Image (tube, rainbow, N blue to C red; front, side, top):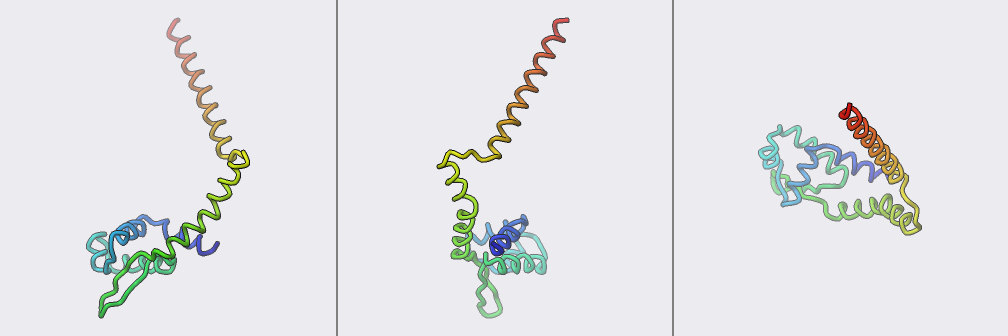
Length: 130
């Protein structure tokens, strides 16, 4: 569970999401990411460190260069963990015919909005006739 929380924490930043999107195309060195993101080297390195600690990216050293790429294996593991935590229980409840409480709340909210709209329309029609 702690690893999944670390995963979501790493994804909670727009810059890190952009980095992951870029690395999904191909591996890149820090200098390429700096150029594309228009950020300082320390800022990009900070984000890469968080992504690496979460197991989302790999780094490969080639001489003085470090290239970063997505860690596909860990990505798949996180997908499976996410499915076990959230998707599987929801699917099981739906199979049993148990409606999620959020669906009941949404229905209540929708009903309230419809009733409010009907009152507004009725009020505007009554006011327009006098």
